[in-house]
Image: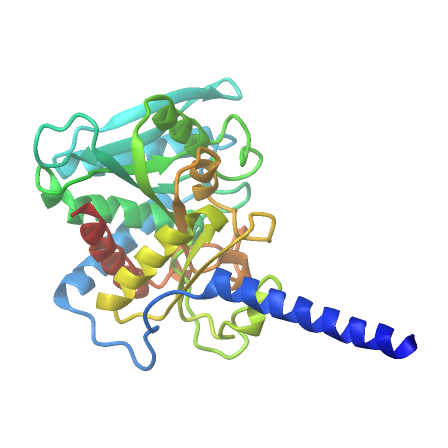
Length: 334
């Protein structure tokens, strides 16, 4: 009897281990091979892009900007609108009240070729507010700057691609508004769902400006440290379980033409970090959505601190990532 019980326990443990490995493989296996070794020299376009990104980041993160610092939030919103308008866009607003004050999401779009009234939609977004007590250079002026520059880089898709591409700067991602009725991206995603827009992909650019090749510079929520590298030199493409197909498509495209380290995968939203950005709001509406990130608190020592200033952001690496995302969106828009 004891022998049979021991054998049963061993078989059970092996089965659990096999199931765990299978689940981990399902969540973390992505196509293509990550870039390894030295990065190639910046191209002239990337060097110019890095300078533009640095200017946006320094302006957006000059001071703390959120509803508690309303005038600074307004200055940032006006800067974003003026910059997007300078690219030739008609700038739209989605306005609502937060704590009695008018706030807004900001959007522009390129339209597909032809006269189709119901195209598929790609949303490229980032939040532009900062957390209380921080100017928010990496979190999330880096992401906001990337969306601004992607809108410029992809302006030539207007009346050319097969999909509508919406570039959106969201308000109120940070606490205390995260996952509340005041969250900008939740308001925006719900509006798209009410209009029955066919959102094929949503990208949330979230804290993308800090990279380190030092051993031990990267940590993870369990159990991902078992398989991913301990050097924080990569960009991550992260989704919840329902977005696995989009994560695969994105990583395959990025790795096919961008020489920059990357990882990707999906996981349940209850795992710390997996749902900590605006992609969560879109997943709540049933849209496939991916967060593009440097992994924020799992790498960045200045996360949600007063020390999150523009000098901490590596604009040249952000430029490399942005060019890679530009190519991904071009692939998806065909």
